[in-house]
Length: 119
Image (cartoon, rainbow, N blue to C red; front, side, top):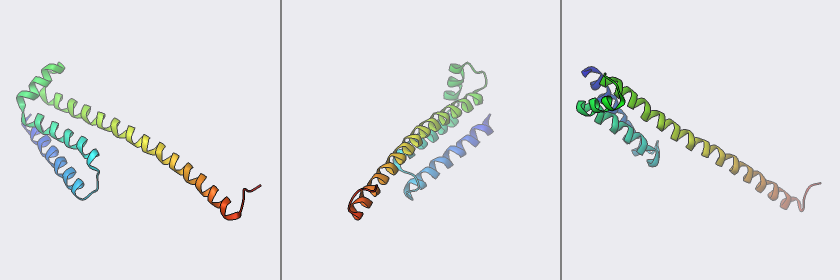
């Protein structure tokens, strides 16, 4: 169990550093980094608090605390992936609307240049 907790601690610390460096270099926007920072913090806290992990395992009805850690980790990342899927879907819809507006503007500009609508 200690090896798994140590690996999880290292991975969550690496994730924290990676997100902070990415924000500093403007590779990721701050509003998106908050989710990653929270997920890494949850993993770090659970991996360094065996008592909290055992409580979580008991609440989930599991007899093996590392399984609770993996279940919580999977749940956190599943929620994050869902959130980012919603964001990507909205961005795609906004992109389509923007392309349509641009096409309309180009049509009107072309008509103004030629002196009237095309037949």
